[in-house]
Image 1 (tube, rainbow, N blue to C red):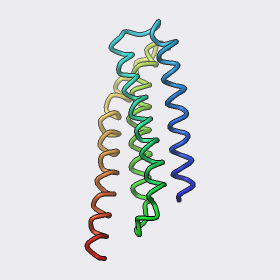
Image 2 (image 1 turned 180 degrees about the vertical axis):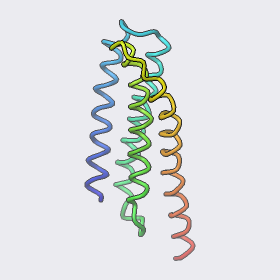
Image 3 (image 1 turned 90 degrees about the horizontal axis):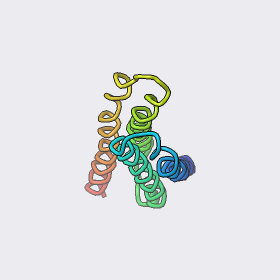
Length: 131
């Protein structure tokens, strides 16, 4: 599990840097400032989640409970959140209107990321009371 979390964290961080550079150098000429700011939010949260996963992996030895659910909430959450933002910004450039698909995904993805952290907190606190 630790390798999966580390690998995922590194991939999220690397791709957020790539997408951030893409946004700063290519998108600024193609989309409005408001859409560029939205794109940057997706990139920023992807970076946060990647760093969070590396932190989680480095602290795994402190947890005596399974982290699969926490990992899944984080991964599905960030994919839904960031990818939906990228889709909302980029698909109009392709002449597509997928707002009905991507629009609802963003808040659900954000909620899943929050749930991932809350589940970790609850498991940690529950585990501490059992010690």
